[in-house]
Length: 368
Image (cartoon, rainbow, N blue to C red; front, side, top):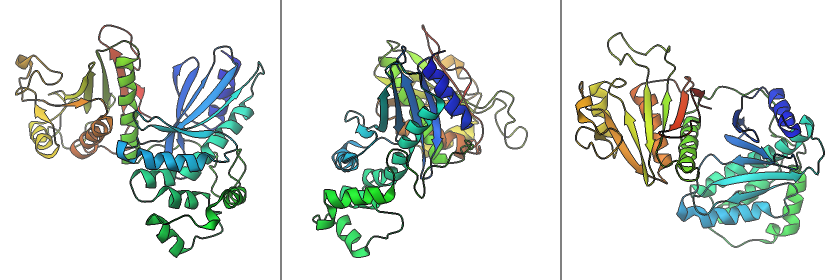
């Protein structure tokens, strides 16, 4: 194991966080921040010459909001002492990156901790404003002023109202004032400040929003595998453990634990719910309540199942998506697990992913 890998593992173990090893030089973990939670991706060169940490914003920015978010990120990056925000204009993914050349020096867990907490501090400070701009709740100027305002000073209500309406910049919004705000907040380079991310053990996810973000992240990962890794035909399933009790009175629910699978092709992907995992009445409810779902026996060429003779008990359901619809697919997955199957959002779910004719990736890995 490389020196960087040992240092990263040492840091993650000290936080009592469970991480996922994507590759020998690439780990990912869910960070329980103060304002939200997000994915932190740590990666380094095989020769230990370079290290980078990326905190990935849990939502993708819609195309029509990307110019406004780009302005917000540009304002946030100005005079940033450690790291910077980045946005992929192709898909709207935003992350905060901190990186360093190690020059052959053997890093310690404490160095990784300092870099990580500098990253987490910036995410905690700017993520609420970023989400406000993403959803059209604030202008970039108003959001950045709130993000950089010292904790002990409240903004003038009239000033904020003017900013929300896109008013002109006042004299206080210049570089000198912004540097003063940043110094007062003490949020650069991992310096301590009120509200800074506190080291604490990872808590079980209980938020539906958090689960949707996890579904979406895995679906996007499979898109990359279906294209970037040359495996245009692959699948992923989300499921309860086999020994998990099925909720509800005996005979009222399927005997198999709740499970759904996604099939990924070159130009599209689709969800398929097997007929052993959902009652006919629930299948009819899904088709009625969720846009785009169909009975696969009626459209055997539309999704995953093509052998209609296998549909014995009743018509299982499916839905077809194009790449870019991962968020909608993630919300559909949450609807099935938490509305139809009535699972708790902190119930354990396992992920399995593999290509049909090539490599396998996850096998009963915890969804986190």
